[in-house]
Image (cartoon, rainbow, N blue to C red; front, side, top):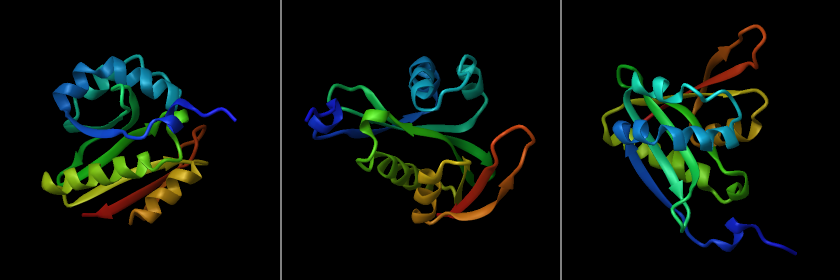
Length: 157
């Protein structure tokens, strides 16, 4: 039985990147997101530039390669929006998404945010379950014709 590169890896580290580092690394982040969340990331640097309190938590393997990401920003006064996240396919199932979420929430609390909001698109059941286990409450639905329904969540810190 063959083992994936990640199964052979024993450690990964989580780093916090501030907004300026996120913008400087926008191409790297966009390339990673294109693998984990295929979409049009061509203007990603522009999207990042206008975000208040932009913050990323990244998981890096032993070689320093990006294997996980949790990116967010301040959307409403005192509320942090956990905007985009994902884990490389070969690294899934090892708790990286949960570790990134925990690190992001700890940082947001320390930074003075009183809550975190996020959304999942249907049918992302794994993320919906992860959000509920992390203490998020369902806050509503975003139903836009022609797009997947989004479940909106909120968690007090």
